[in-house]
Image (cartoon, rainbow, N blue to C red):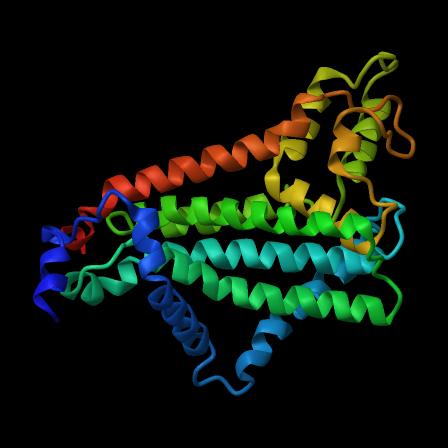
Length: 319
């Protein structure tokens, strides 16, 4: 190590203020860490990288049999099987990215004590590892769907790019927050595992937002003698509002329109009342829900990044 390099290393492993600039200088290190972690994930397994494709395929098979064949969950849009597969691939990335990145700092104690580098690299590299798998799985879904005529690519497919960026920003923000807490409080890992199991059922992996509207209106018909002409009863609207504000639900819903079938509506069309679900008494007219997922993503990313930066200076002494 040269004298100039040694002088550039701040004491106590404190990350410099210009984390963004530092990240550019350490881009190759980030990429090398991500590639190494990706390779290590499948080391000493018989099937190796095939597991990155096999796991979502197995989840898809189980989910399809239970929710489509057994419970007949379907919103009437075509190619529902591919829609579910797409949802599972998106969810698998989100859950793996947050879970893997959460332990990135705690699992690198030796590296943190011995060398200085921007601590954010550890979380970003871990997220890249899950991103590699996600790109492979998503490409495979598109190829298989196109081969069997169940993928509709067009101008609307360009929307997939900002949607995927939105998904990654959301996962990275949560990963920063969880990783910063997990260093000192390992209970966070158990709590997040329970929460993700709950979040799975509210993220539109097996059903669309229009299906939620259908079921809410059906419940209203069954439990009330008369339904107001202007909206759902208040005890049902909050459920629909929460589901519609979920960024993961919004990304999955819009990716289905962009990649699988234009018949699957944009989330914006549903929540602003431009489209009513089949059998729905009145369209959902909650315009604020159209912006809620994007606002939530920015708030989560900002809070996660700020929390990580504030706590990163204490990583070495807490590990």
